[in-house]
Image 1 (cartoon, rainbow, N blue to C red):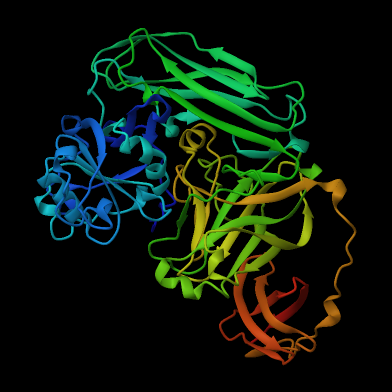
Image 2 (image 1 turned 60 degrees about the horizontal axis):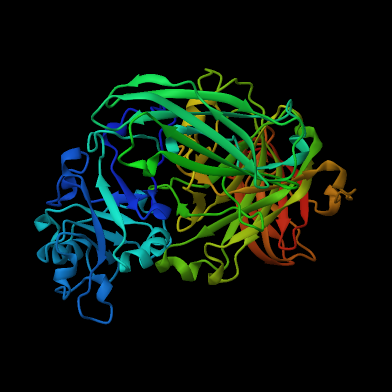
Length: 578
């Protein structure tokens, strides 16, 4: 579950390591074909397993569940009782109760050629380290783990004995094999986008293209890429590239297609499909096709898929492996017609490890909208940095029940912001608690987008340090912005800043803030005159004066912004002079 932050200077290399890419793919039945996320056991971690980056160690065989004769027989923690059913096959077990190495060794003892472990919790396994335990050093067959949802999808067909899967690096495994992964395709810049800023072809279009690889051992001829876009069951785009005459084994080519646009757009879901083809019959067609969609709608902006309620889908939860302070995940937005839109708040999800679940009630997650007013062109611009962040809006959500772990919630901003054209904005979710994991989505991959457009997608702030590429293009913060036509913005009375008069002001050691009539949780943000957050205080009050220590704050003028439990916001200025 833990993630390691990428360094700021990370240079995207989309294809440098693809020759060592280990996959789990279903070859049949056809309706389950495709690649599934995995993590795998490595010799460097103390296992006796073969090196799966070597194509010679790949395995292609039928999947079969184990049984150990106990009530929890599919955990494979004891001597297996169905050896004849898994001998010469890929054994499938569930995670839980015993070590990975124990499960694998029990399957190996009965003749399994590889082992697939299905995760028992809804976490993304791609970042999971597989430890060998006491028996892993004696395991000499491949061992992988796949996501819980993938296991549920495959379960019935595995029990029927009809699933054939591939584990390993398939470069050179087949003589005729082209394809791509989700990291290799250019996709729409966002998954959900308001129709109000997408009215004509001059306001919105989608570039299309993909890297196509020759994974096989033979040269491939007349390689083409096709893309189709379907809306309301009608194909509104269908383009095939000119053929690439020859693609050598191990080589790749980037193929572009005409840009998709419409004279006018309608609200709804647009489904796109990429398909790669060549003259030879492909021996592994599971990775020749990739599909996705984008949603044009009235009031949601998101870089990740949303459900039927237009809430972001969080498939995994991450935090830095060594948190150094506040952890904030963000998504970037800029549009030439942004001034048509207003922003009211953010949807997001958070959770904890099971051991920390009792700490979840009472946890407060902050939502922020920043103007990123630094003048840079792209990620390669020497002027690119975090300077110019101004906090425009703030909100928070306080979890009250353990059952809210992993559920999408909404934080309303303290004020509604009407945006400006061509300005950059960051929409961010922040936690100050090191036991909190924030929601991400790993089902889509923006790697090729980042390489092509060189624009930020999901930046991260960790302990005051800015990481432009976040956790990488393959995981994106599961944040959805409540973004709607500004004509719906009501006229709201501003709260008087004179309602609270802090003292002494200027302050040198402490500042006293009268809390008469205020009860419950309050959140106090202290920001310098450039809008940078200096300090945050959370406290439960019952009408008494709140005393804040300012000895750790440098001399200067500061804006204090207090948000009460009922969402009311009061701001005032304080001078620190020691």
